[in-house]
Image 1 (cartoon, rainbow, N blue to C red):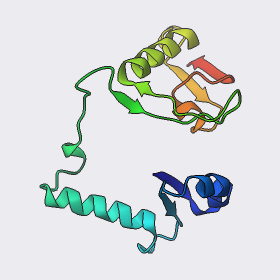
Image 2 (cartoon, rainbow, N blue to C red; image 1 turned 180 degrees about the vertical axis):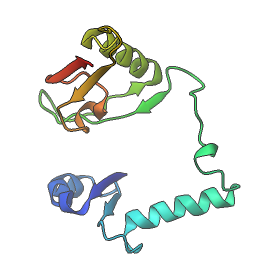
Image 3 (tube, helix red, strand yellow; image 1 turned 30 degrees about the vertical axis):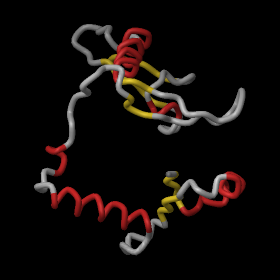
Length: 139
């Protein structure tokens, strides 16, 4: 399934014509409750209610296995055809720690706190990789 904003559906026309069995869930941003995206959200809420209405508390907070998949972002196909890249819990955790060390966010000047300014769109590598342009600073 591909979830896509209505304004970007036309970008997937050739993909959709060559892969007609893959369903599209289109968000029209209408907030009327009649578009497929809002209907899917409503279905999820009804399912949660039928299972005891646990909401966020009913979500699994930790992976059973550190090698379980946490995300499958898709590359843009810059160097080859677009493809899904499997991120694991362990890999994401280690990448986050590596970014803290590499960016100097673990260093403190006096009593200041370190920060990180993200300068690329959050969809870039699911917002988890160290961007090409960033600013690390300590206050």
